[in-house]
Length: 588
Image (cartoon, rainbow, N blue to C red; front, side, top):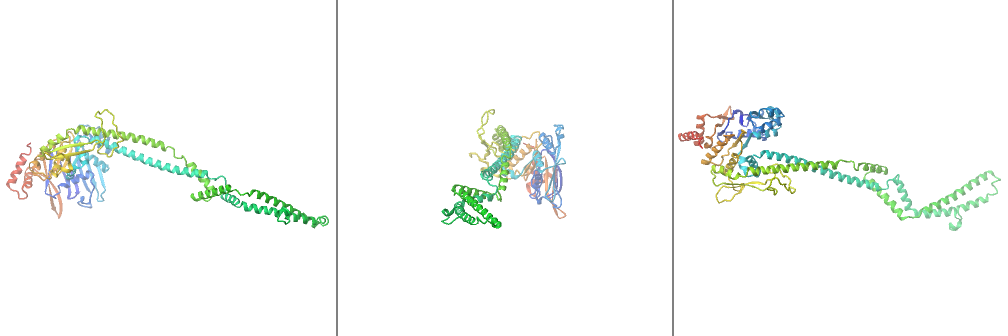
């Protein structure tokens, strides 16, 4: 239960601190006086974004603080978790505890959130605040035709929030693991592509004749020899003939060897007579030997220069291939290519354990998926059981609100065909969770307000007033016994009047018997039913406009109701009617 509300420097409020009691507290005031400002301030504790308009004085911080008193074990456990205070769990569970929630927003829009003086993240403050109070504004009444709003309401009625939270937790855990697995598979696929690329390059270099040639120039020379073999052979044979084949091979001309022999013969008698001539003829004889050796070498080289088209093609292929590899890898030498081949060989198979990691993630993801599926199944069964009589219960509430002919159907089509026996195994048929809210259920409320009209989707047939009454009817079905829960309604009575408004007020008053209700209203019939009455005014002091809150006593309350009935110029009739409303406010 909310016991104290403190607001400072928010919108038109300079500073406000007000105690709260049990039951139904109504808030009234002229349009624009600032009634909804209180709920906007509460919205900050529920995680709403701070806007510049929230600061009455832009140079000061905005502060919203709410103090609760509750013995709810779920609230205690959540607070112990968020504040890291296990001692909270060791206290007497039957004794109510105080929980102070505070949010400060400085002029730079930076938040500081506290739970019992312990600093927490905004999401944690929001999580605990959501367990302690429920804010139903006009937006929720308008949005009651949306499936997301409907399922949240239905879970409140069914008391399935714990099941839904557990399913949502299992769903988020599975989504996280699935993302990790998808990232792992993508990484593995990338690695496989890189390894295939590495293997391709390595095989390409492995198949290349890198070890057959020390340098590329040697291959180029070998190819040049082959490509010029015919011409070289012919010229070498010609050189052989010139050097040592005589007239038969030299076109009828004597060879160089023949000429040298003949010349030596002419000096045969002088060698022994003239020492210098002898030395010269010895040199001439050596020249003859060298010429004969040159002729033999020319013959040998000519024998080797036999044109071989296959060898030429092979050498050309090798040269083109090696030059292509050098260009491809932007290298300059065969030695560099051999080094690259060695590095690529070392890189192959250098990522061990990837498949093992993938298998581990697949196992974790499959386990998390099974947990999410089972949590969704438990949520579905809890909803189905708790909401089996929803139509009858809600229609009874709607009848009290002046909608005697209203019909409400909860249409739910599970995503799977489920066995009727809960002990039977479910054939999941590859079903995967789609969100953290619906689970297996495809829920929608169908509605009809008039006799003879078949129910249709709520969004297609319900008016604004009907939506407001339906929202209240559903909220009134929520089991809150023992929780001292706080519910805040912002003009849920919009669009209704007369006897219907009185019935709505009576229903709110009944809800206030086992939970705390705070209601902003414009209707005197409802305002008269409150256990406490606050009145909001807009005042001007020192040329500054500000909102003020007044807790009304009995006389002030009668005057406020008379003003709501007859306006500022109300008369005796309005005063009498206000007094009658207050006198009979406890009547059924």
